[in-house]
Image (cartoon, rainbow, N blue to C red; front, top):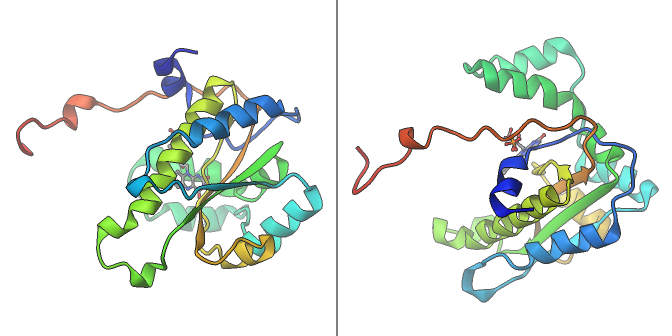
Length: 205
Ligand SMILES: Cc1cc2nc3c(=O)[nH]c(=O)nc-3n(C[C@H](O)[C@H](O)[C@H](O)COP(=O)(O)O)c2cc1C
């Protein structure tokens, strides 16, 4: 697939077909992740694929404590903080799937990276390992799109329990938990944004 085609196709998908993902496609996507640029030549990235379903259930329920928000009133209370109707729509669709997407996806990937604790960081510059990890994540998501595979980059609010459960070594963080697979419905094309409204030349005017 041509590069811009993959960029335009990539969308967040939270509902998947019950269909195995070919191992070589997974490996190609992860290898693409490892080709991403990084700060200080430090590619500290490690991947965990959670394939044992019992272990995955425990990781999601006990470690991650991800939950589906099903109650309509609770969802409406949550979306009330946003003015934009589009944003409300996205949350109404995604909140009930936060746990389900991880339990039902054919693959669940964790992207880990090394970083000193947030308390020790005093400048944005020191967050470069996090920025680099997301370069890796985006390469993976684009590579998956090129394979016809889609997923969701879930960011754990608190990953301590999950790291403990999976034996992630001290000093590592989890950038994203990514359920992925073949989409249940064809994802709409990525519409993009109005570039002219965001492009400034020679200063912010
Ligand atoms: C840093 C980051 C964190 C995100 N966290 C979540 C999340 O916790 N749960 C979720 O369902 N989607 C999450 N998303 C996916 C966004 O909701 C999605 O990318 C956004 O709505 C734009 O849609 P698109 O990816 O289809 O273009 C996250 C995306 C990013 C980049």
